[in-house]
Length: 198
Ligand SMILES: [Zn+2]
Image 1 (cartoon, rainbow, N blue to C red):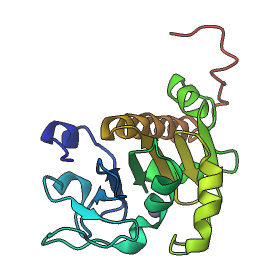
Image 2 (cartoon, helix red, strand yellow):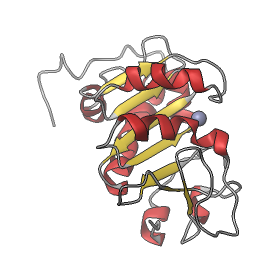
Image 3 (cartoon, protein in one colour):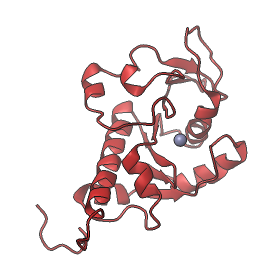
Image 4 (cartoon, rainbow, N blue to C red):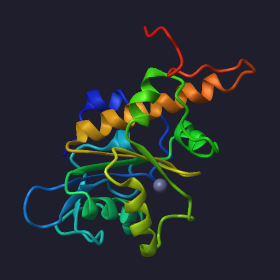
């Protein structure tokens, strides 16, 4: 999997430097994955992805290291969801902001309605290093496309990297709209109660 320069230019959000990851399952009977090298930001990725197993160990030669702790969330989702061939997880400012709001994602925009149709929440348990958290994370994700990790960030799954990216794009945009719409003193209006849809 490579991230094209075109796609890189379309990712306008700060992602918490090198501390979030994308993973994609490699075709075949082995549970092997391509993931981001530790120390690289998303916009630096080219052919530098690292092939690892479910425990985050490298299974092919690579000059780059991986952060096994960073793969905890991804491996849990990949094991539980055969259809989730790509998992994307971010700590974007807007995503973390909405994840810290008690009500979670509000139906304030068309973008949010699409996300809300397949969204669940997972409570914060500290930095995700604990293997015991995996079943709870998988349970909370269920069969959904979107998981909001409270006080932490966003997670999306897809059958392809493009699917996971597009889901993350709309998830992020919905959060960005919510942060801006709730920043002022104006009352907000639900998209569900609106009579006009543009
Ligand atoms: Zn995270």
